[in-house]
Every structure is written in C-alpha cells, then in structure tokens.
Length: 281
Image 1 (cartoon, rainbow, N blue to C red):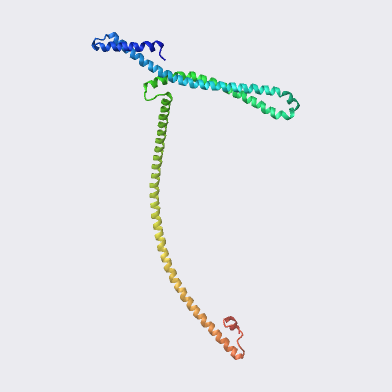
Image 2 (image 1 turned 135 degrees about the horizontal axis):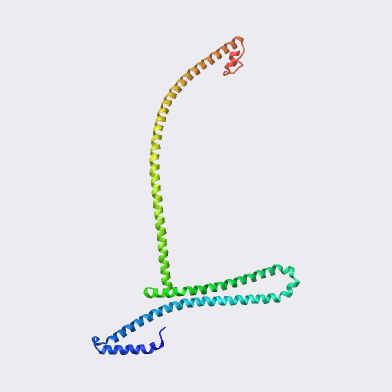
C-alpha cells in the first residue's frame, strides 16, 4: 500500500513535469530532471510489484486466519460442551448413587466420551500449534512466490502458479512412467518374437520328423493291408469250402437217417437240423 502523500502530490508533480517538458525542447531537459523521472518510474514499478506481493500474502494470511478462527471456535465449542458435560454429571451424581449398579455401563460410556473429548481437544490444540508453525514456515515461501509471480505476467495468483507447476510435474512423471512401460513392453515383445522364431524352427523340425515317421507307418500299413487282404480272401475261400462240405455232410446224415426210419417203418422223430441226433440213431 502506498504512503498517503503519494495520493495528493504525485499527480500534481506528474502534471507539472509533463507540462514543463512539453513546453520545452527534449534536448534542453536538465539531466537531474531526467534522472528524477527515471527514479520515479522505478519507484512506481517497485510499488506495483510490492502491492502484488502484499495482495498474495494478504490472501494467504486471510485464509490461515479464517482457519485459525474456525479452530478457535471449535475449541470453544468443545470446551463449552465439556463444561456442560461436567455440570450435568455433577447434577446426576446424587441419583447415580441409588442406581450405581444399573448406571455403571452408562457411566463407563460417559467417561469414555469425556476421555474422547479431552483427546479431541488436545488434538485440536496440537493442530492449532501445527498450523501456526506451518504459517511461520510458509511466510518466506509466500514472499518468494510473490517475487516469482511478479516475473511471470501470465499468472495472476499464486495458486495458479502452483497448480501449473504441479500439473507439469505430474505430466513429466506420467511421461516417464509411460516411457518405461513402453520400453518394457518392447523388450518383452522382442523376447516373445525370439521365442516364437525358435519355437517355429523346432516345430518345423518336429513336423518333418513326424512326416517321415507317418510315411513309414503308411507304407507299413499298406503292406499289412495287402497281407491281411490276401489272408482274408484265403480264409473266405476256406470257409466256403468248409461250409459246402458241412452242408454235404448234413445232407448225407439226413438221408441216412430217413433211410433208417423207412427201414424201421416209423416216422422221423428228430428235427431236420439235429444232425448229431440223426447220426446217433
């Protein structure tokens, strides 16, 4: 924030200096006046940078102050709640003497609640102290961020600068992770390709050996087929001869049996197909 006299005297001084310079030739302006104008411009620039830094610091300070007030309010609420709890416990003490056996579980729960509230109060106090220490530690960082923000006109607020930096860091980390993954995938693909090439050569070799074995088996099967075909034809011929001989034998036995029955003058009592019985008769 600028000093009060600048609000009144700086515009008048600027107007007078501008009027005087416009009325004179630039080549005739005194050197001390030019230096004074340069110093004034530097002062204006420094004042603007200081205002921007103060605005950032005031924003952070207001945020921490609001957080501080919230913690204090919560602390007061907890203190009031705890005091009210103690008053209520004292008022119910006379009645608790008559119902001690019945109220023991409830009293235990209340005591646990009191311990919890105390622990919560202590935790809030520690949080308050931690935030205070963090505020002290972050104050130089806030000044540094303000200076950096003054050198980067594309950013208006400190959170924008921090968010931009975090985004770039996350993007860089993601790109590095993606690059490592792609390299690992490439190495894995190369290893798989090498394995596939080796497996293909082994498979071609196995298939060649298998083809040779199958050709040998096919030739042996053909020879066996021809052998058994000739054997089958021979068996079929032998079976036909045996069947014909058997038929003739059965016909002869039947004729003999019928001749015996005619000689004995009695009808045949056996079945035509019972060749064994016919021979016994």
